[in-house]
Image (cartoon, rainbow, N blue to C red; front, side, top):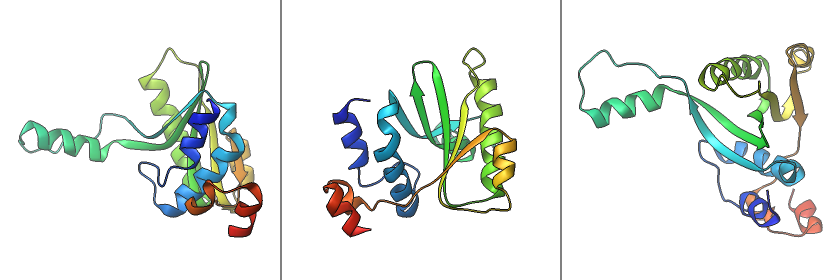
Length: 162
């Protein structure tokens, strides 16, 4: 990612599919690691979604399918390598299951691409499940959130705002 692209991401007021708390965690992570990647996509939908079982107009049917598809918080690319990121305030067992499910859906949707790296990013980690992340090959990073108001600030101003 170019410095300009990264700055645009870090200074974005929100990220698709995320509330403020998750956006602040994502922003802090992007500021620290975003330059390691070529591009990022948010709220990426995977899977077929669920059929409603009733006859609907096409627009309503599409909306029902989209609302039931699985959504990855952030997908990062570096060349052909893909990283699937789940962002949580508190990293616990649920994130393990989500990431394993996303990996399976990714591989069935994109069978020609290499298996993705899995990454859980959060403000805190449930120490009881830390070894489960590790045993499942999921990378974990605990990071202090960065509020949007501090994103365009200098490092000293960012430190003072958090």
